[in-house]
Length: 412
Image (cartoon, rainbow, N blue to C red; front, top):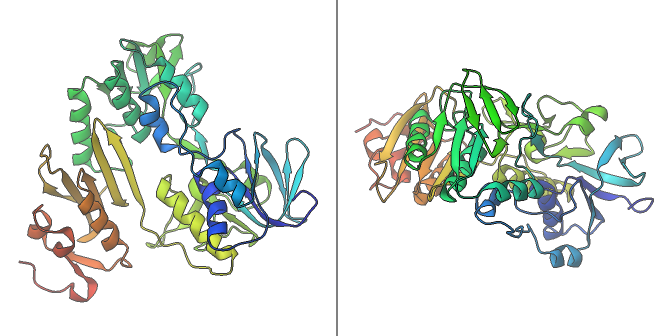
């Protein structure tokens, strides 16, 4: 498309960017589609990087689509060359090597980058295939791994490393693991799970410095390490958007149709800040969000625009247990336990805000998770909950809630 027919240009070859391109062909778009990516790989699945990919060395990447799909559908990839500027007046994306790509529609799927930790020079990160390979090579039985950050990535890596016989210490600045996304009871359950497996968790501690094979903590303790993983979150890649004059606020600001402040440019995935149904704005880092936003944009480009209203959901695997979360709840939400932690049937935790269902966290209970996604997707219509029924794991979750028009019925 350089100097030729303008079409759709997608900046970013991760899940969001690849799904935009694939979805455009699925919904019938016939014009040129080009995807620009920093990495040299065709789009691949990132979630396995902190899970199955680390279980053995030399594991192949899992492609989002086979190469034959991209060839058959005439999606052009320009890989290993970063985009450096967007010329909004002439509708062109400029590349570091001097090339330029004209666009009619531009989609920014620039993703996010690992947040650096000051004083942790020489440590490892986990965002790309190359970083995953470097980390996997360190996970030898008896090796010492220090994980800085007890979010999803840090805890998943700790679980895999411990299963490979690695001595693991996880250092977290806050008072509990995965505190930004899960409830207190679930966080405590995971903490016990990790400790029983031999993972040492150090909470309420900050890392002062990493010097060689030593990790210095703020409280004075020094940890020996053969490898150090920094997993303290990510920052959205917004430089391209900022320099193009688009509105940015911890993410590229978009409307309900995922349009930026320039109607010819949309943003999707980890880099996009979009309006939520509760009137706030949010930026989500999840497979579901990236995929659903990408499909929303593809439909809009072919003239079938709809607002983005998908229910957020997330998942994690640790020590053979599968966590699935539907919805997002604030830290001060109340919790209701459904089932018995430790049982073969698993358990769920319902999170409530002013008596309304906001989120459901499920451990090894996929039926609860699927029911929660349906309930939370019903335009927020779930108003009242039968607390007795909801806490009974033998009662289908759908039968324990009432739609809005029945909100005033007596609770048994």
